[in-house]
Image 1 (tube, one colour):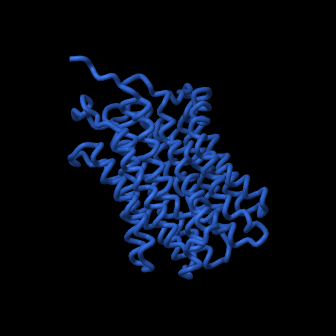
Image 2: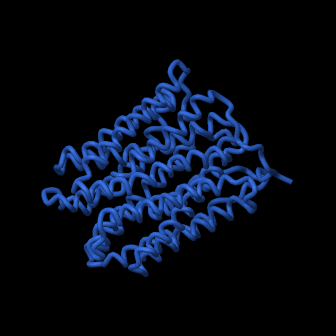
Image 3: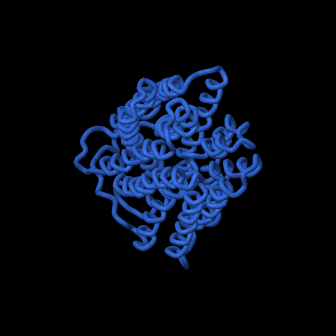
Length: 391
């Protein structure tokens, strides 16, 4: 019997599509849909923030559930099933106007997207590392930026054609549902790799791993306020409102190649060092979104946000995988949970402060501070350690 030849391209492509659908669309399409939705339903910024936080709470609990050793079934089955749930809950947002149902749907969708992130990362990274193709790992997370760009273009086109906010959700969910078939065809099960592996354990510097998890949580808080409200900020400023149809597309286009860029940077200077630099650059972008209210300022904010947040996501997960041995699912889930906790706090915090102050200045500057703190934490934990590349 001849051994099956491992072909990484279909696997990585399937992983890219899965993250594009579940994260790029399932999670982030809320940002460009929020302004017309809030206008049509007269949502306050606090209510909009609570809806976003419900999604992130689901993401946190989903990440913890995905790490449970007793969770049976094939990783591929979980990936495809939760990808379908993410798509269906996205579409269902267009079938109701109830705040309670919005919260429930976004919560369930958040759980599903976390499962997709954990299982897509586990299936793809594990196979690539085992086959000596770890250099391709960073490509996986380019799917998020790709999904953001595609969904932003879809939303902008439908708005131009006169669609209401309900139609935007239905179309976005339909697009995500189409991705389920592609993932089914492209992502194989682990086959011979399916034997139970030992739970992931720290194999390197414990201080570096703990600091990375904490920094990942700070990063979750630091990016999410701008990622949730950037389009709303543009809509609320008359001098830059013409940028509204384009700003989220700019974020997505900057995000799509960013993972490859930051992987190359990490290969040159080391993953922790690249993580630190990317956090500082993102902090500048977050601050620009509230300190430089102009078309140039917001284009810069969009580029810096899109050009870093998926790069930081990928660098964090790859570094966590490098610092552990055994089954990576647990450590990837812990990272995702820390990230999710930061995301839960961010939108509600920003929405409440906006309703009090009438501005996103204070929450956005707090977010920039969190990103700088994440950079300092990882820099401190890795001071004096030799650089380790992303591959």
